Length: 442
Image (cartoon, rainbow, N blue to C red; front, side):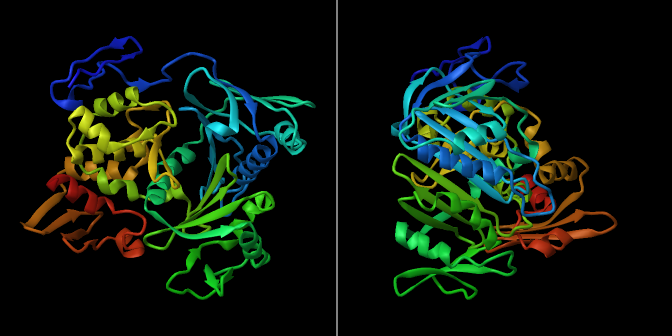
């Protein structure tokens, strides 16, 4: 196998001796964009009216909130690369994730470089989008510092802004939920309109389910074996602006039947909207990423992969393992580390991860995952005592605040006597005590 070579901020070429273990970036403390080219993409939209409607829907999502946090954000993330454009964001409460995947046929232009930026969608941009007609020529430019939209009536430039920290935390969780989803229903245009006509009016409480009866889809308060649960059903109204132009929609559900996603198909592009289990729960509060972060890995390995991958590039851990002689278990852990930094997304239609290039600091994993930080502290303070360890069974005592918690991990389950586990039963990720024990025995 040939040596991998790269040139990254003056640090060039490494030779492969032990797979990815030689992805060492000496003295590197922060990843930045590979290039300083001001423009990533320049070209025109092949379906400007549909694109504008989708952008307006994204703006509607990022300006909304369904929890205690008031609406305060309006700045989607824009990624350019691999002949695709992606626009994505969260509601202010982090409970709704939205992403527009623009396929190569949706744009006619040149990708000068690949990269990601984060801009506001202010009123001038929304006004320009709302005025776009079906046959109008619209030019789009995406760069490091700004996004520009030029129509026959207006020229709007939105400047780069700081990426909200809770959005980064949401990005670390939502792709794990998406990767766990399976397709449940496919609806054509007529079925889609009929479904949303049965959407409950106003703000309603309790669970609702999408179900199919006699060939017709509808909302119901009763669960069936093949229904899809919708937590906070009023959040689906965010999709109303695109229903008239959608070709079909796909409805996905996670294996635990708590989260769901809707993918609206337009031919040249797809709009995905994912919903957290309930209105009061944001994706940034979930801890599922911790399950596969129990092994301590050199941050240089994460840097090495970051230097090899481009924005929107398909992330295939199996091929990366084979091509770079990396153990599959190590690759799983590397994937989790990349996820924990918000560097991976998941495409439901293609059933594959894609890479999202973002600047990040080495300490981001700990800062965005306080349970991981606290688990490491338990280990450093020697607060964990393994009481029994045998095939398929581990029992431990873990010091808490004035109490000793009991942790049991076996082939069927993992449990802890702490308040976190009692309250959530693993539905929001493992507690710091279970995590600490798993880190010790891994």
